[in-house]
Image (tube, rainbow, N blue to C red):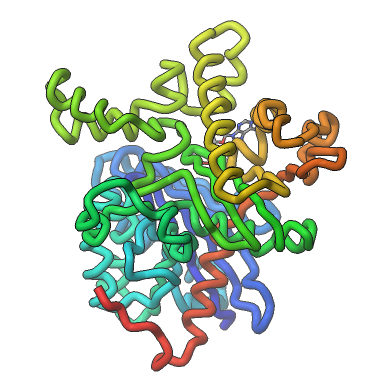
Length: 405
Ligand code: AMP
């Protein structure tokens, strides 16, 4: 039987998963990518193999009963039935928050799970959904090793000054500090930089992870030194539906003057703001680009997104003391040449010189001239999780860090 890893990224109504063969010594090899959407509403499963061919495309009953547990059991059964010779040896999970304790991937035990549950208040819209499949697997397959990989971990080595809010010190001690997110994406980009240009790996680089969630990260010699997301995944850039940086006074205004409850206010900032809120049309950049010429509100949303990237970029260049390269990644960064062009034109002050033809064809290098360079590099958070899961499993048990929380 060929040993395989399952990599999971669970959301409120979706379950993204990938299956990797554990090669010996080499990189884990991806064999399937799958997505369950519409859980509890109109569940739909699609699985593609490594050539991109769809190998499963199914709807499930829409009586509201088919949730995460059914989805996971279905995936496990599908692998058993379909693969004829694959053995599931471990599950790697994308977990949004590792708090102050978990600065690297960790094998899940009862204590680890309890500690991660205590972090729910720090990421209430993501952490509970990330943890749900862990609980399900522990119940259904108690002997199956599970590894938690954290979006916060890559930023744990930032200088303290980059992690502080100007709040009373006791709040910092109590965990109110900048954590940063999208760390699996940034860790992946840092790992492949040398293959694009060895000088970049040793230089000052800003990575722009521009997807439905969006943030920037400053890398110095491949290590995170500052990032735009802070205590929560709400901070920094405007996103598909999230507001990004906001004057904290607005929250008090929403509560006192607009009489919103905390849950309503939170919902507005997380799900009704960003590109969707400003445009009133869509959170999807493809849609906004399609209609921008005739819909001023769509144009305004794009302009604000690009403007905020430019301002945050300036702040990270200051934190780095200069910039050698800018990397675009994730859905918008990898695919939307117009956003890349607008960002790079706005950053001409830093010496970027856009190469229109290279940008239109997707790079990888999209600048020319002697100034800093810009690149398009596809991210691969799932591969990072597969690598980390394999590494944790191969550690002797005694050397595994014990959770201290
Ligand atoms: P992600 O969260 O990384 O999957 O990215 C989702 C975002 O990428 C959405 O705003 C999509 O509209 C955007 N996106 C994906 N493909 C394209 C494309 N070809 N052109 C413009 N935006 C795209």
